[in-house]
Amino acid sequence: MMIKTGLAAFVGGAIRIINIESVSVHANLGIAKEEHGWKTATLSGNTNTIAMMGMAPFVTSVSYNYDGTKLASGSRDKMIKVWDLDDNGGVVYQTLVGHSEWVYSVDFSPDGTKVISGSRDMTAKVWDLINGGTPITLHGHTGDVNSVAFNPATNTVATGSDDNTIRLWDMSKNGALIAVLDGHTGWIRTISYNHDGTQIASGSNDYTIKIWDLDDNGGTVTRTLVGHTDRVYSVDFSPDGTKIVSGSLDDTVKVWDLVNGKTPITLEGHTGSVKSVAFSTDGNNIASGSYDNTIRLWNANNGAIIGTLNGHTRTVTSLSYSPDGSHLASGSWDETINIWEIPSELSAQRPTTPLTLPATHPISFLVVVLAFCLGYFAYGRFGVRQILAKRYWHLSTTDTDEEVQLTQHVE
Image (cartoon, rainbow, N blue to C red; front, side, top):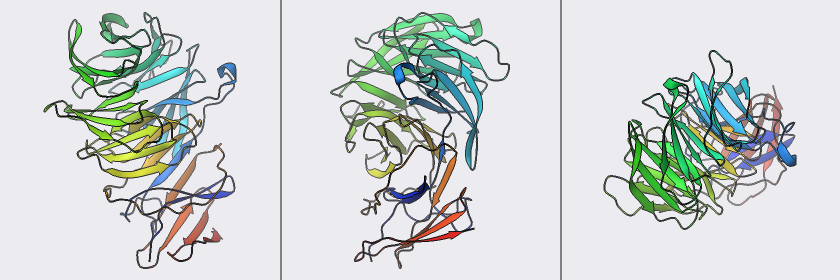
């Protein structure tokens, strides 16, 4: 008997199956005593009241704090939201207002007390979440600030811009400029520090990735990685600093070995530009988000596909793993943030064909917590509980009967 796997969601009165490929039955995750597997929470809080030119408030960036209890998000509504997270999703803890244009990038300080944001208004701002007050504004770029990052080891921040430069700033001196790193010939789309703050990786419209060795006076390019055939949208260091993952407009993900200098592993499968990439906390897996509206999970060592997460309805712009690796946050142009709970072990086998049900899927206006239970192999059944509505759906399929039977039980 063939088993159909997926995640069933009850949203806006509609049922659909979200394809979760190659996920086996796992241990209890505390959602309900009988349930196993993944859950998602959808966070909705950015509004379109001040969106420019009628643009929707696309979520452009997400970032976990050091202990996974908070999440920062940036949006085209010009605001940054800080979310308090719990087992049921999250609620807005703070809304930071000050940018005059879209917010492109956010990052938490290592101690979680500050957030940095980069904007289309050509500035970056550093916000004090404890004491509040006026944020420190970093002036100097002559183009959009597309990417920002806190150094994990020192009290400095980095910003990457459409002016083709990276700027380093000393936050112990109220944001004094340390250095301008000039080497790319195109807009800088993305920057990432390594684990000890001694290097920065940058991705650019010039199709390259540069590795910068940092010192007290700034930094110098020590390596240029060439291989993508279009703009590089996202880069991330592995936790141990030995690898870099990159996502590009050429629809591919590449994994670069910085120690042995081998030809990069190219991960193919997305049917649209790869907008966001992230290493898992243990460095064994990679997540990539794309213009094809999906998130793909990959084995970082051999490039094998682990699974595809279908939940967003527009481009997945940003990804962030929680510090303990148990959750993955994804931001999207569909105006939502999804929180995915990651099983402790992932299957790298090829997926079975997913079951799909046609249904419209409107954007949530409340935090929606979803959980699913993968079926027993002997019977081809699985049950799903949508917690907030207290509704239980039991679905059954076989390899010969493609119809789906739904039985509802309301608690």
